[in-house]
Length: 423
Ligand code: AMP
Ligand code: GLY
Image (tube, rainbow, N blue to C red):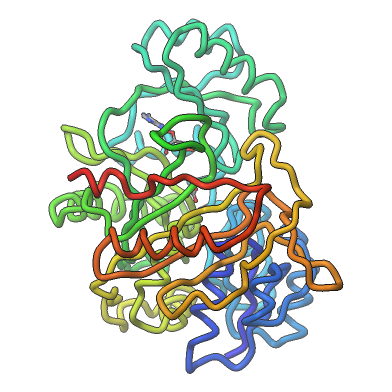
């Protein structure tokens, strides 16, 4: 098979690494890819939202399958264009993608289809949003409506902080994503990420993980796209998984199909396990980053048949995926200043050395000079991932590798997996 993979983050490097190991693969081309991905596939410098150029590229390589990594490509209608041009596509249409691209849409969707989620108000202006705070108690949760790379959410401890977050969100900081805000109830509990595949009709669970959204140790600092993950995550007991499947996953896929937009791809359910059971925090219409990295490390089966089945409507012909009975972790190395204003350009040494069979380093925001010097080129820069028989051992291996990478311009969290270790 010829496969076009769209994206350039650590998630896409992990997907490329896994796809490259498939016996079904003839040719893998990534657009735009990154220097790490260039070690396991061809890369082409086409932006993830340049839909016509990506369709041309699919034609050029006679793609048998297009795999969409990031939400921006979904929201740009890449799947719609690929399907119109006759290319099977893993990744939902823009209409189905509203489950991520608009929080206001998703909240209404939850109401229409009975999905448990936080009580909320969607507000178009600051005065209404500030007045709405009276209907909630501290801490207050303020969200920009559209896509903001995981950074559009503020959990405010005081009313003054909440009002400042409302002004900030509506004040243009998130561009069009900030034209509306959602004020919602704070959900108390433990967070988790669950993944499910859909081929338009059939549904299949595809693993779980736990992410760490805050920038600094001890859950301090601003929300980020995610600073580290581990899988399995003990918050996902069999009972929790079953509740997520019946109360969130199945009604979501059935609901979006009933609204005329059958879902082809992976749905990422970010949820809070509360005293009243799992409640939706948000849907994402793609793999999580860095959740995908730990899932790919643990996935024992070939990924490609699952991606293909989602695109072609044949998921019911596959067995459930098998994950290794091992622990996998991912430690994100981010550039100083991330998430507000990451400092790019600093030199990284030792990222591509051989760390042994149980450690894998995925690239995210990196670039390489003509002389081979590796530099930071984004917020989240490297993902140091490891497997082990216990979580502790996987973490020790990952942090030992982190300490062998010489990058004074970056930082990481040192407490990935703390909730599981504390149990
Ligand atoms: P999101 O971008 O919606 O995933 O939110 C980012 C982070 O904010 C989540 O991972 C949670 O840690 C936190 N968060 C979002 N919504 C809520 C909520 N209603 N209650 C408590 N925490 C929340
Ligand atoms: N790690 C969370 C996300 O991908 O949005």
